[in-house]
Image (cartoon, rainbow, N blue to C red; front, side, top):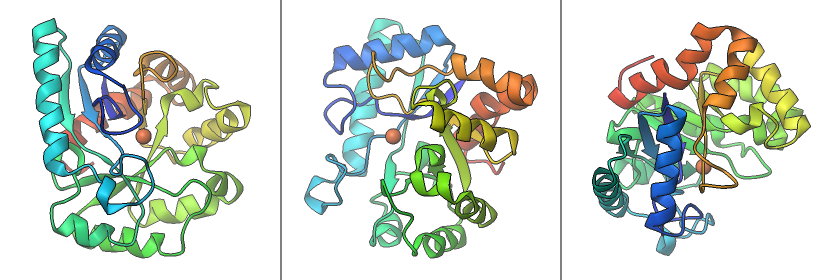
Length: 244
Ligand SMILES: [Fe+2]
């Protein structure tokens, strides 16, 4: 399996505090059956949009290199790829153009996009459209956890029609974010609105990088083949920068 959304680089965001925890996370991932992880720190260190608190593409790439080294020395066989989780903010398109935002595995094709916590800004559809014109497919991070999508799922459906992909959080499916989120997640999966499942892990305890509990539930909901697509076949193509 491949996890496309993991906060595993220490010191860049609200992920692990140090390399010891990052290593623990990678060991858990390996034991769970993961072979690859895309490291997706928040673009802004404290999540608020502030240019002075931005993780540069160079700093993320450097941290990825360091983590690879740590894992190689520890004999952990999980490959690490660069990426970041980008909030919707006014300068997004311009900064992408300047190469300041890392797409998944630096492939220039898929961008992990996060909505603000409580609103879906009116500009979202325009940004998604413009990203499409640049050949970039936005992957909506955890839409099932967003209160507006839960209340007005048609807003999510519209974004999917505009070319977005939907990536749910694995633990949402198995109750990690409460019953209401679990029910909505199930509805999205059964309705065919979900293409990808990722852990959005932040540490080794509360939010670990595990996909197998969700995979079991997915298999019951949509069958083993489609479940496998969401955690392995499609993520692999995304890492390679191939169209789905
Ligand atoms: Fe995240």
